Length: 235
Ligand SMILES: C[S@@+](CC[C@H](N)C(=O)[O-])C[C@H]1O[C@@H](n2cnc3c(N)ncnc32)[C@H](O)[C@@H]1O
Image (cartoon, rainbow, N blue to C red; front, side):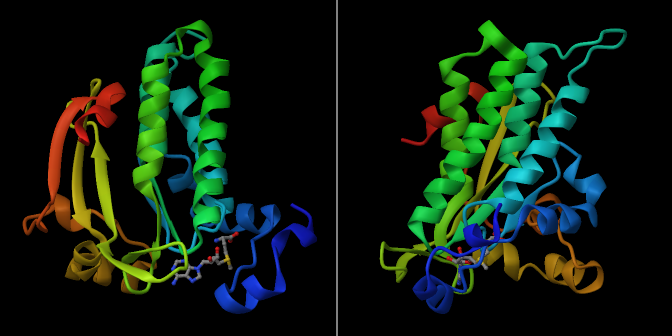
């Protein structure tokens, strides 16, 4: 990224603090938590994600890890069906919020493009439209146009709507092709004492930590299905 790419307009800088982080700084900051960026299922949330400079680099790293994870013992190349599953897991672990709808669209498209290029390179003629649609659906759910301070979704003028930000916890509870989606409001996830404690003491926290613990926040929706069909259950 050139320095001039870091700013879109003077108005946007003063109204929304919109200054994009350059690649070198992105990598230096991510290297502070390198092992997490190289783990396929570690979750990252960027509350002012812009067009996704951090999320894009994390996805690239996770796709390298997905390839390694899907090489069968004694073989030199990833097994395409396993890479497909691992790469969907990688995409589903990334979350972003931004006030500006154009940034949100660019961020989703950018993450999709990075995933799809690697998907095509590794899986070749074993790629399928259903998996691509599932990834698009997950990105629509995970990258949200909202206000990270009020925790509400926003309209095209960046004003809060009455709709709270809701995040889906995606997981593969049976370590096969079945994927679980469980939705929680962002407000409820953040109000859990556990994540507050974690962030205060370590600077990091698991967004869904309380969902895995003994006191489960109320979830709004839940289903388990083949990961290529997650989009079919959102009617
Ligand atoms: C400084 S830019 C950083 C973008 C990206 N994180 C990066 O480093 O390249 C800040 C972004 O935060 C967004 N933003 C500002 N206030 C926000 C809020 N309350 N909730 C969500 N996004 C916000 C702006 O729209 C802008 O895209």
